Image: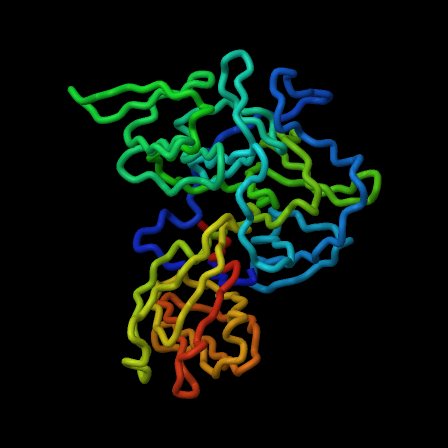
Amino acid sequence: MNVLLVLPILAMPFAACLAPWGSAAPHLQFAPMGAGQDRPVTITAPRMRDRSSESVDALLPSLRILRTDGSVAEIGPEDEPPDPSTVLAVVADLPARAVDSPMGSDGVMQLVDGQRIVGSLSVPGGVAMWVSEWLPPAKVSLDSVRAIAFEGPLPPAAVGSDVLRLRNGDRLDGVAASLEGDVLTFETASGDDRSVVQVPIDAVRSLALVAPMVQPRRAVRTWLDDGSVVDAAAVAWSQDGQGRWEASLLDADGRRLTRIRRSRVLAQAGGTGWVRSIAEWAPEVGEPLGAEGMRYALTAPRAMPGTWALDAPSVVVDGPVRLTYPPAPPGSILVASARRPLSALGSGSFELRIRCGDTEVFRRRFLPGDERHEIRATLTDAPVIVELLPDDGKVVGDSLILERAVVCGTQP
């Protein structure tokens, strides 16, 4: 079984209890667009755009391709992107960054399978529909939703009870009972203290629901530059009349759900395996041998906030430190891009060491002025130990940022 543990090329911690590797789960289905099908005139925003009339793309980035053997290839802006089902992941070669909150009147809806759809709520015929730029309108079912933000970023995950935040700053904890048309029914407390309120959607800032985050289905997931994350059964790349590459997202019957220009695609992960961010894992944090007492306090790796390509936020690691992660599945490969923070480029030197049990699999020395090192190491089934060790007797500037770190596997 070939499995890949990938730290930035493609950067959080190994969770004590992970869902089964590569397990499948249901997701919200969007109806395909029929030939000549238009949106109902009652739905006004936002409309799906006709990209064929746009001018030639601005300078496109190259694409970095993570192959199933852990190697990384690069193709140019004019080359045909690969079929995502034949590789583990494809990432636009751009500086790692979080995608900002939706701008203007757009909100964002997060589904229980991890999809995030930027758009807005419309109520044609009294039915609550989520309307996006990329997909046909879909009826909103609270059973499929983890969170909705009508203004600003998605709210924190709900724990214990649903959380309703209003535009006037009020907060209610309880149960979101139903969304009928443009009215949300929300229950607070229970028993004799039970209270039911009906809130106009226009008064709602965000809603977070207690719902398990299930694993996405085994299909192609696409991350877009507006913060949307959408699934499809398959993706087919083709060129339009002006020679620009476009991705057609297809359903299980091969019908096109939507078409997206390459310039809008940040990343894709295909059906040959699964991809998970290491930021989901929480390592044990300790002092490395020989560096005891050099720091007043040890800190766990910090994942940067926001929405990131491959759902892999950049992770900040402050040294000296020893991070111990659970064993990765046998045959894993660690691929990483580690860089120093700009504020620490001129600081002293330190070493990054990675071991599997007692076996060292990677070592790299960071000198003053070194900005970035690429990492690739074959892992065993022993605990993975990552150490940052001072090389000059000082700890100032002994920090790394790990970007787009993910775990990839070719088998469940």
